[in-house]
Length: 329
Image (cartoon, rainbow, N blue to C red):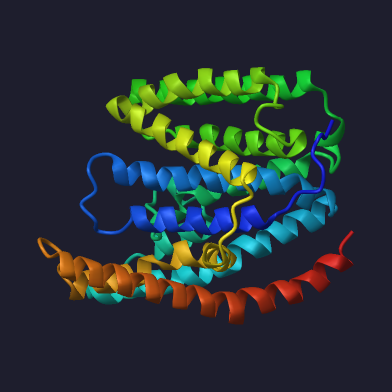
C-alpha cells in the first residue's frame, strides 16, 4: 500500500521545532487580537499530531507490542513527571500554600488523565498528552504491519467510526453543556491522517473519502462544541495541515528550529515555570518594553531548562531504557 520512498526527515525536525514555538507563542502574555493567539497555538497542536501519526507506524514496526508500549511510556512519562513536580512546587511556593494543599491534583496529573478524574491540568500544555497516550495504546494493540496490508475500505470504516464518535461527543457536549472531550476524536483522526500521509507520500494521493469524512465530522463538531469559536478551530487545523504539507513539499530546513525541535518536548512543558515566576516579577500591562523583556527571559529560561533536561535526564534515561527494551520480547 505504501507509495512513499525513503523520506528526508530533516523537515520533520524543523517542523517540530516550529510547532513548539507556535505553542510557546500562544501562551505568552501578548494581547493577541481575538482569536489569533488561539489559532497560533492550536495550529501547533495540529502539527504535533500530524507528525505523531507520520512517525508512529515506523516506530511500531521496529518493535514488539511490549517494546513499543515501554518505549512510548519512557519517552513520555518520566520527564513529564519531573517537570510536573517542579511546576507544582513552583505554584505552591508562589501561592504561599502548603506543600500538600493540592497533592491530590498532583497525583491525578501524574496519570495524564486528570481531566477525566475531575482535576485541572497543573501544566497547561499537558492537556493533549492523554490523547497521545490513547493513540499509542491503540497502535500497540494493532499488529506491527497492520497499516501495510489493511485495505482502503477498512481505513475508511475507521474514519467513519472515529468521525461518528466525535460528532456524538460534540452532541453530548452541546446538550449537556459539560466539557466532553471533542478534541480527543478530532486529534486522534488527525494522527490517522498523518499515518496515511506517510503511507501515500502526498496529501493528494490519500483517498479523498478519508479527508471528506474528517471534514464532515470536524465542521459540525467544532460548532456544536465551541459555538462561535468553531471558525477559529477550522482556521487553526487548516493552517496546521497546510504548514505540514508545505514543510514536506519544500523540505524546509532550519538549524535553529532543528535544535528547538530536539528539545521541544521539554521546552513547551517546562515553559510554565519561568512564566509563573515572571508574572510575579514583571507587570507587562501597558508596557511594550516590559513585554519584550518578559518574552526574552521566558524564552531563554525555557530553552535552558529544556536543554538541561534533555541532555542530563532524557537522553541518558533513553539510552539506559534502550538496553532494557532490547531485552523484551
